[in-house]
Structure formats: C-alpha cells, structure tokens
Image (tube, rainbow, N blue to C red):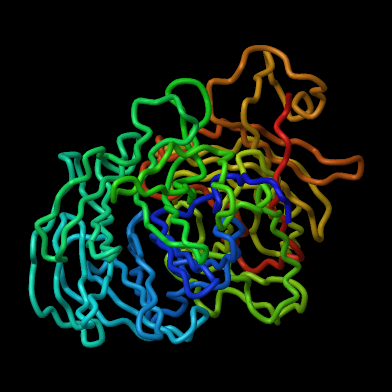
Amino acid sequence: MSTGASYRNPVVPGFHPDPSVCRVSADYYLVCSSFEYFPGVPLLHSRDLVTWRQIGNILDRPGQLALPADTEASRGIFAPTLRHHDGRFWLVTTNVSLGRHLIVTAPEPTGPWSDPVYLDLPHVDPSLAWDDDGTCWLTTSGVDAYRIDPDGGRVLEGPIPLWSGTGGQYPEAPHLYRIDGWWYLLLSEGGTHTGHAVSVARSRSPRGPFTPAPANPILTHRSTDLPVQATGHGDLVQALDGSWWLVLLGIRARGQWPPYHVLGRETFLAPVRWVDGWPVVDPVREITAAPPGSAPAGAAPAGPDAFHDDFDAAVLAPEWISPRSRPDDCWSLTDRPGWLTLHAVGATLDLAGATIVALRQRYHDSRTSVRVDPGTGTAGLTIRIDEAHHYDLEVRAGIVRVVGRAGPFRQVFATHAVPDGPVVLTVATRTHDIYPPTVTSAADLAARTAPRGVRAAGCDMVTFEVAGPAGPVVLAELDGRYLSTEVAAGFTGRVVGMYVTGGSAAFDWFTHRPAAAPH
C-alpha cells in the first residue's frame, strides 16, 4: 500500500450511481442502483473507503427482483439505502417497474438476503433510520417521513413533511442521521445532471422542524469547469478513526462542447469537515488529498484493476449482469467446462429478451476482448446502453461483421471472413481521438501509423478488431456519442459483454482492461 495521502476518484468507476454506504466495525459496505439489470443492487466491500471489491448482488434471485419482460431501460431498481441496525443489515429500495418500495434483510452482508417486504408508498429514494427507542423512520423523495414497522411492512404514521431543500427541482435522496444530539437531513436537489447539489438541514427531532445550513448547498459543481460534474445523491459515513466522508455520484464527460458522458454516473468519495455543527465538503476532484491520518490516507492513487474471467469457477462472478433477467436455460458453465455457453432466447439485440452477459464499462480508454467459438450460432461482443443504442461485433458462419444501432437507424459497417472455429474479438474505446482526412476502408484504418487531420468533437471512438494471422485487423471505427447518456437518455451507462442471438455459442475467456489514450 502506498504511503501517499491521496486517492483517485471515482472510487467505483463505471455505471455505479446513487451510492449508499454503511460501516460495521472496520468494514465498509456500499450499494448502488442497478435499474433494469439482473442481478440487482451490487454490493461492494472496502477496508479503506477507496479500494472496493464487489462481493455480491443483494437482489440475486427472481423472487426478490421482479422485472417484467417489458421493463423499459432505466426503470427497475432505483436508489437503494444500506444500513446496519440491531445486528442485521437492512436494504430498502424502490422497484419503479412495480411501483413499490421493498425491504430485505440479512445477518451477514453476503446473505442470504430475505424475501422482500413491500411498502406501497409514493415517490422513490427510500432511506431508513432508527431512533434511540427503536422507532424506524422511512424517508422518501419529496421529502416525507413515515414511521414504519420494517419487519411487517406496515406504515404506522405519515406522511410527515420534513424539508424540501432550498428550492431546487427534484428534492431526493433524503437520509436522516443522528449526530451529537441533532437529526441531520441530507438531500439532493437540482436534478441528477449538471444542476445536481447536496443540501442539509437539522432538527432536534426527526419530525422537524428542520433548519437549513447557512451555506447550502454544501456541495455542487454546477456552473463550474471542474472535470467531475453532476455531483449529488450523497450518503455520509463516519470512519473507524472518527473522520467523516461522503460517497456521492458524479459524471466525467468528454469531448468538445457539449460534452458527453458514456460511463454513466459513478461513485466518488469526498472528505467531510464539521464547522460550527455543519458538514462542509470541498469540490470533488479526480485526485483527492485525504486529511492526514484519516481512513484513506494510505490508499494508492492507482486506478481500478483489469477484469478477467476464464469461466473456470462453479458460478458466474458477481460483476456479470444481464438486462431484466438471466434464465437458467440461457447460460451454462458446465455444458463445456472452462467455457461459458450461451443459448439464444431472443433473435435480436434490438428488442428486449436477448441473451446478454455483460460487464459495466470501467474506463474511458479501454480494450475488451473475448475468445468465442460460435459453432453454428450467431454470437459476439456488444457495447450498449439499451436496445436502441448498441454497437455489435458479431460472428456467424465464417463472417465477422460490425453492426450499429442508434435510435431508428441500423447499419452493417464492415464484414470480414474468418476461419471456422474460435476467434478473438476486441472492442476498444479511446478518448481525444483525431480523425484522418479520409477513411475509405478497413485496410486504411489498419494502416494508420500516426494521427492526422482535425480533432474529433465527440467523447470517444469505438474500434472493432478481429485477431488475424498477422495481428489484429481493424474493421471499423464508430463515433461513441451515439452510445452516450446525452443521446440515449436514461440513468445508466455503457456495458460491454457477450451475447448470442441464434443457436448457441461458447466463450473461453473475457478481458476488460484499461488502454492508454493516444497522444
């Protein structure tokens, strides 16, 4: 471990929005929204608030996570809150596809997590807090509070209006904390984009009245040129050493004006100071100095590790997600030991229901490769935001092709013949690219030795390669803006993964790693 007193943000890169954190002794646990993906609510563990490892998913079986087949992109599971109380872990969240809040509990963070207890209440972003006498309070966006029986799912009192912020739109993500005799109400407002902000108020009672902090909002990057934007949806945690921290979401947009963000909303970490009884948060930076002697002070500023899976384990790694569901009959680790075999249950990635096993894209500059044996099937590597916005590198019957879908448009951009049998496919992304004056063929792309021409306006370029006898063959380069939130809309970021839309195919290994941007 490094001795440098700084760390790199985001601490959880890629599509990990709406973070919530709790500490149990020296261990920290963090959850994020998962929207239409299954399994739901990724669960991560850390000992220093900086280095996080995913240890599971809380909603990991269909009985806990009901996502109808027609669930729209960016619906599903919104804004979970994780707490530890009376020897149990508690998670509350909203399944907006059902219009219901749900609570699950577990004796240990790795489970087993209970079946849901449902509460039919309006709004989203539920949070739990307990008074000294054991009274449980649930808060929701708006901002309202309810006194509830969390075990039985009964509302005992409410709604009780609390405080709706300083006037910004969409007061949301309310969390109540009991600190030094005060009840602090932390909430976000201004919308979950560049107007996002965190504000706070306090009261002697969870019922209010709440007095706003004199320096609200205590955190916002709106109207600044800081590289991290949309800062908000925060959750406070006190470290074992007594220091205080805020986990929050933010975005890192790229490209010329207007910039685009493609990784979704990511999880950032910021130190918190207390001044005159109020939390103070400095601007969030990609390299952040930790207060001397505080929890992450020894954390190295290095970025996240590469991800590799040989499919030799008995179960899929927790990082793998699939849109809406992952039926047992669409995948297997035993049909061909050491390979992941996928079976088609949908004939196109343009409609919900296709077999996809994907990973959240973690790096702006990335290389994702897979070795696939298509057999007689149709399979490949996709980089996607939703059914209407995806690029696919597909192999079938000795032909590899690049297919792009952007809104109402679908096009085949390149084809290339390959021998029968396993083939290595690669999708690469790179920022700050430079367009050549003309590109007339795949051979022209492959022959480029130096950047020429004018700088691209977009956030990144997506390159598609297939391994050949003499090295990688570049088939096409596509503008990454069509796979951005600004174009596709919604609350998620890109994922990249394996798919099959005809027959069956087997995947030997999968690698997702950072790649240096070109100079």
